[in-house]
Image (cartoon, rainbow, N blue to C red; front, side, top):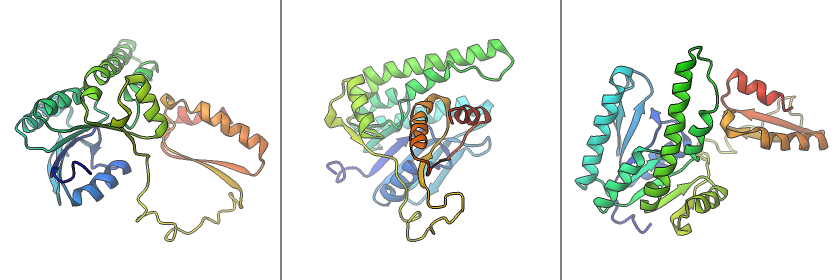
Length: 276
């Protein structure tokens, strides 16, 4: 709120494909903030032919070309262009979301330009890449698989160093996903607590109002107590830990049903089913 009177144009850089679909991005920023502020987005294209510039009300989407041959050049040129705009004071506030490496450059430029820099951590992404580097892929080319995993490891380690020594210390404010994550970031990176704000994942109550959605009468539920998990079953989330807790509850309470809603590969489904 203290920045509201002097912030009119925002630059937001998330590693999110266009069209943007994540609810914490589309609702919080596109639906609410764009009514009061002009927002420029720098995002990746979801398909090879969807690069370009797209306008939607007070929002402008600068979409990096998704074509493999043009992606690197488009990525570099778009980011350089945006960084020059930051340096020329086009933006009143710059925000990066889960940008492990490139976020450090925006943090430095924002500091030089005397513009507020906000970093949004939806997940400890440095740990994500490090953990992903430990998982073998189905690629039969062992050399390619090792090279790819090594690249993820380097990216995760480098991102963690940049977060700790550049991005987070230079940030005017940092958003995290939960109070627990706020405590973890505070202890891990020694960040001033006043700079950390937890913004839990939510839903659009206008679209998912209880008054508009009828209660399910599917016989499977049959008035049983339900434990609901919504999200992916990605191995890096280590869901075996909380799911084993669910098993204990189900063993003690016979009327409990566990429901999972989200994306999952066959191997992820198989590993979770083994827990139950």
